[in-house]
Length: 121
Length: 300
Image 1 (cartoon, rainbow over the protein chains, first blue to last red):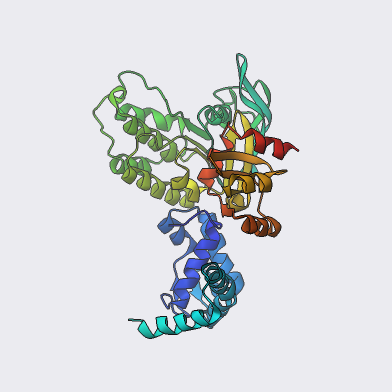
Image 2 (image 1 turned 45 degrees about the horizontal axis):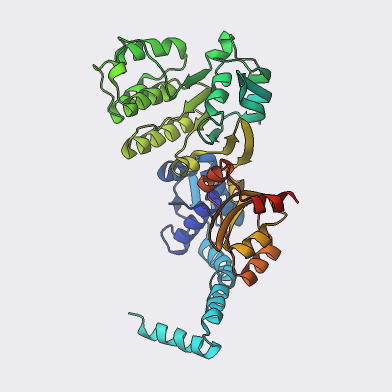
């Protein structure tokens, strides 16, 4: 499930964040507890807590004492903004590097993007 | 955080060879430590010392601040089942379940019953007729149902099928969460168990090669691969843990994190920089054969 590329707690945080953006966990609803995530992914509970707390620090989740962990209002927008900031580094840069290796010009690339979007099933 | 286990400058020699050689490490209370390394690296010796079944030749071992060897109050807080644990000839499962709670003040009958059921341990067969996997299953019952403050699990997976291994992980995590304790688990099944660990220690030739928190693993080493000439050049004045060469191509596992300078130079020379998994790291620390040229470079 999780690979060795980045620390497991970051991968868990990224996965929960993806689920919030995708609407799996709507705002102001509960997410599973760190203990539940730990049991589900068969990971160390401290690692799972670290992952969940990353999203608490970011303001995407908040703890309600004795009740559980909830998705904050505005969490979706907040996480989308984080992902937009990462978009250039994670997608655009590799795309442009690969295009250069293959000799695909900027104009070709624009055209490819338009075609891909038009032919999308 | 206080340490459940503390060992300082410990060596253990058997005849001429040192099973442990100047080992210092501490295990924080309530954490799960992965103890990794090749056969003969010193993992079982470490556990024997912590369990008070053996004494260090030099240095000291402390469990909750006290020496475990022949120390009753410490020993009752430790469970250690060797991977080659022997049982009296006539023993069957019932005998083990009758004796074990005598030495384990926190013994849980429920956990034992759940594990026996889930691991499908036969209850009428003499233990001496058990298969490797069934012996491992008995060791897991003793290890987890004891709920000992210090739980030492030595290669708990030997011969266990994949369903049993998952079941073991589930019960381990659930019972550890409900009843926190300090766990040291040695294994060769690195990928399967790495998510359990708070910390990881890699031993080789009786020495600690790595002792880090799990989240620090990705920055411990990286792999450089590509044309041999490029890799050799980039690897010079770096510590090469292991390398693999075919004519013209080399892949080297290098200690440390790759900096941006190295990344861009690798790019220019047609070499790739990739991250290292814990499993690869364990393999690299256990490797003896290092390309002489790379080793020279690392020492220069």
